[in-house]
Image (tube, rainbow, N blue to C red):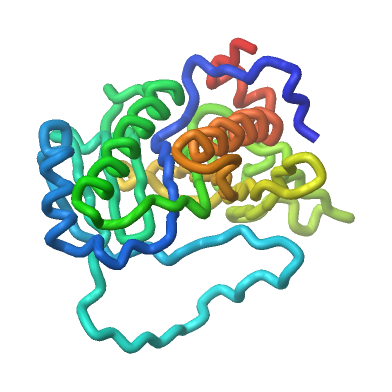
Length: 277
């Protein structure tokens, strides 16, 4: 159990490269491509660039039932082309808004060494303002009502080699969750390692959602430096109706992500990231 009575851990130089706050809601059939074009006008001053992508699948954290198998092929009879997921990006590409018929997302991304993580409080404030503007647009254009059913907050970390570890077989130098032990010396060091772990986020006696932790061995595209991509995603139901309930889950999810990140990473890496508490 996470001890919420203690202050949140802090790092002066965390390896965060992306943060995403996302709310999923009941699908809005009237939110089609023309309406998305009108919506862009509400964000164009800050997000002058646009892209189109396939829509994300709906995702729900379910409890007490078997998980849905991954990789299931589904067929749909469509009477019209699917409405795309639209990206509205700022000039630098460091921030973007994603909108589709059942999803609204705000992302911050690190695109260069000069970009520093602006911290959760600022990202949350921006997300709240954008989500409120989106809800006002839906009401004004009579598109429909925003009824959130799942919330999601994701932190992506790139833990680069060279400080604390050198090759992908040394995941134990980064994560306390991975400590390979063998009965002999036949296989002392793996070539690489990856990890996937889930934790239940409680709400009293009932589960509120889950925290998903995934670690993948990857290489930095610019110079092929080995990285561990450490992704933590908290997903679950809003804690109350409306925007306030969405933000309430984001705060809880962020707390679980930060405390878990500090718990599952090694003291050696904490020194490199300059942990202050």
